[in-house]
Image 1 (cartoon, rainbow, N blue to C red):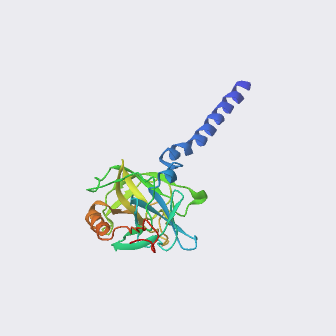
Image 2 (tube, rainbow, N blue to C red; image 1 turned 180 degrees about the horizontal axis):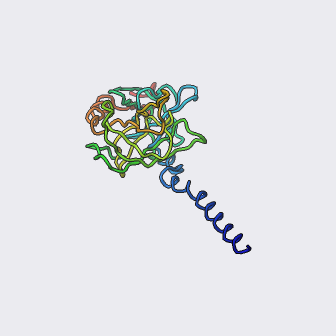
Image 3 (tube, rainbow, N blue to C red; image 1 turned 90 degrees about the vertical axis):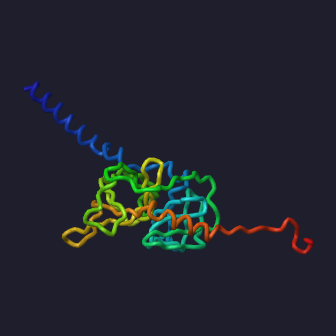
Amino acid sequence: MRILRTAIAVILTLVALTFAAAPALAAENSLVDTTIPSQRWLVRVWSWDHSFACSGALITPSWLLTRDGCPTNGDIDAGGQIRRATFTALRGKLLLARLDAPVTGFPSRTLATQDPAVGTDAWRYAGGDRHLDEYVRLATRIDTDAGFPTADMIVSGTPATFVRGDQGGPVFVGDTMVGITDYALRWTEDNYLDVTGPIGVLSIARNRQWLTDTMAAHPPLVIKYPQCPIFLCS
């Protein structure tokens, strides 16, 4: 009887350890990344009253790329450096915003020249409207766009639910930014947004020329101050 009780105890312990370890597997693919704010390329785009925030991505120290519908009338937080938008341009659902001052310490990011192939592993980054000021990176995969013709690309397999503040966040393959998170694409039978289903992605490669042309046509404002008091300058 003692042997039987011992065996049962061992089995129950193993079961408990199995269930306790299960979340760790998801954590490897979906995690809070505390290094992101200091890198400053993933930003939080606040509404004017700080009641809601989208995600966004810096593509240069002075230019932000996010999704149409995200606020541009509030603070733009790049790792603690607060900026405001002074100019915006829209193409489809991509929103490009020029900042009132460049973000310092910004590492250059490579922009895609072509869309990644279906089946390519990717990371989806988000920082808006999440608990505890979390910045997260979520493992995902480029999926087929069959059935969703309005989407440039689709990602699936993210082991976490989509939240509204994820929109505007960048999607990376390796060190290359390939897209901007659009929105969840599928609805449930009860007519609710399926936050665990496929997510649309706005392509960088398909809009790269527009980005380049728009930034060149609307350069950041440069204010030059005189080297001497105005009333003394000749």
